[in-house]
Length: 267
Image 1 (tube, rainbow, N blue to C red):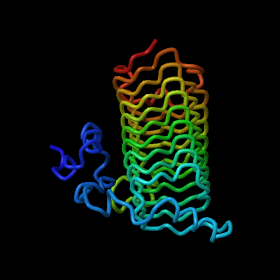
Image 2: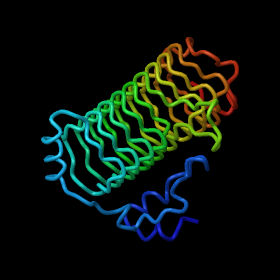
Image 3: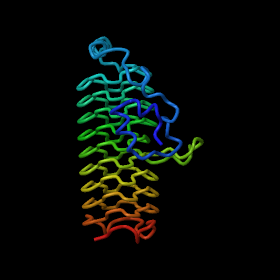
Image 4: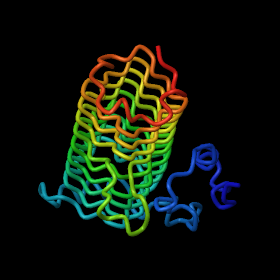
């Protein structure tokens, strides 16, 4: 049953209720009131942020812990900004430059990052369910975050760092969660999504060349026409996955250790 406080959030809650829950260690929403001003409101406006950028003279802004939900910050220069623990729920950051920004533990439910630049950014433990990243650049970003139901269509995710760190799991398995996420045509070449949750994700036509999906959950995922040249799939669960018209399938690494390979759809 969905949390009653989430239901009260209206349109946002309706979208979230349909999304699958991530690993318990990453479910920060369980005891949070998403209707509160701290989560749904803003303590400033765009004009004030623009003034801060001018006054900073090119230095990264410190917006850590700020309440910025619902603002239109599209196109702003936020390179290197510290947005750790910031509230960005339904914030519009389309086309913004967040190169090298820190968004660790930020809340960005249904935020809009369409076409944004986030190369080298850190999104550790970020809550971004239902967020939009179509055409965004997250090359080399650290994405150990919850992007359940997010739209990353055509996004650039080369050398993404989303693998679980098995040396630091005192709170349970913390990993990239892309359950039911949309990644058609995404560039994931060289990405590390080992042990990631990608069940029911749409990876149709994605480039996974040289990527690691070792131990990942790909059950029910759609990999139709995905490029898998040198892709590591050792121990990945592909139950019900659509493995149709794969490109460079002969170059898959670890194919003989796939879990539930007989339950995948191959052609």
